[in-house]
Image (tube, rainbow, N blue to C red; front, top):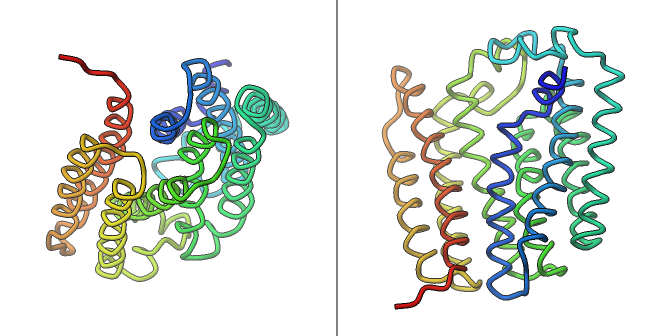
Length: 288
């Protein structure tokens, strides 16, 4: 039973988002006082709020989950977990996570994480995902909130650096999500979800992905020029951005788009892990 309730929180998504929370925290910690307890509380608070959103997403998406090979085995779609119990579980997670951020970090981080929750649950899950090709864009807003919360937990104010961090992760979400939609295209067609590759075709989606990757590269550079990222950040960011640009610009056909989109997806994970890791490494005092 415990394992079942854990599964509907989508642990993989939580872990991925916590990496970006750490990135925001590490970036802010370069200029503001921070400690390990604050990091742990921030990670725990954001994890619970994200888990709540994922449970609600599982509840609301039961019908379309049954139409997709990847999701038809989910416990809520199969009716193996009581919906009312799952909803109470989601509310408890939301309240606990928000309270932890409010009490151990600051009210601003709690408010921002709630705004991200609203975007994900109400705007993305309940409306745009099913009805608009812009659902991915709306989802990218909520997806960029975790690193911003990590940053605000330390600073308690929104700066230009915070805005650039938010923009960076918004832009990252788009080609990352389009790549998933492309190699899972049949699933999205079966469920009637209007993602760009399904609605407008592979070539148009590829052009959008290229534009977003270029914009991501520019914001990553701006974060070095206008923020507190050091030369280690610049080297790593340049390296992963080059890799992502190189694979995204490769020629795509009807025969190789699945392989290409999987490559774009895999490199996107290297991008976020590389940038998040180097921001943390830069905090380690090195001495000769």
